[in-house]
Length: 212
Length: 331
Image (tube, rainbow over all chains, first blue to last red; front, side):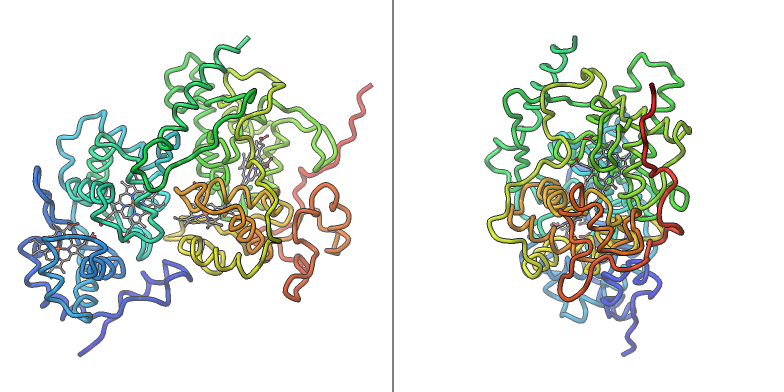
């Protein structure tokens, strides 16, 4: 089986910290293993925003190391997802790498769920994402998720162009303890300072931002 | 008189700062230290307040430019800035946040005598200091548009505070920690660094630049602050770290961990002190009393004499013009 590395240029852009750790996986094999995933994550990896229900995240164009880590964490239970559990259980170690590489190479699609956002929510969301609210110690999202909230390496996933419903679900998951897998609890510390208004505002604003 | 204003801000500040400390179900309470009796507490105005204010539109434009320069100082890269810092890299939360080097106190306490350069400094000269050392660069010219914009932003943040306040200022600078119980230690510091910092600042201290944009600033090496920067003093760095790092989790390190990791960082190499005489031991001796007694510059740590080099990082000169002694000669 031919092993493909995630594009070298991408790994290099991450600098010395993670250049050495490009995830090894086979995108072709990943595509096959992902056949069972498309019903939710869609053939183009774009997922779906489901108003009033649990949204399916966009996987297309997310970092391979990040996706792989999520699959492992879901399997291990530090990120609880009853919906995903049966599907990660179907994947062995190599297949997890393969699907991660496969999805990371698909072109990023646009986020949904922010279409009806009020001007007030958008202004508040933009503020949280770009300058933060230091009085409540909500650090700007882009300080960790990178310029344009387009993601940083394998640790800080892209948020721009992710579905609003999914972003909001995850922030609540940190608050209620069902997602407990973030390094140093960097994300937990931020999420638990956010209220419902913050969550609604920032998730809608982020979903409307260009994914690349 | 602005006493009522100060009192009002104090009430707001206490309310805001204790917001999370009381919520029992929170795993990372913010726990901002409470103001002490008699301290001056000031909540600086925001950029939203600026838009709503009655200031002249042209002044608003200048202050907005100052804010933009403060947050994204990298736009002066290669001109005034020769490392990966923004002003906001150390003066966090737009330079408004207590315990994170809020910058407005300079606008109400200067001009004043400064031991670091042994003469009376005004606000522009104080800003020039951070350009010369913390940004490893050279300041915009005194009176230039950029200098005007930056100092106007500082002054705007101080709105409502009396000049030369006699009360001590709550959260000014990076308030000092108690002395460490054990002598700060390189090995323990390295452990803290690798467990809690290198994820963002990288193992070699260089931080992270992605697609040409600085994401995480360098804590040592060519793209960090130089040996003459205030934060190169171990006590300043320890306090900065305790009060501000890991990002979003202020106050979670023990004092000892903060001292250890500060010692570890400040035993790494960085660009030369602009006041370098050509001899590191001589330079240390010259500025020992006013500065280097608190740094590891010119000391031998792990068999290496620190600061013994001509490396100025990516800055093509050693000393900016602006760092001149001043003798006040008016009659």
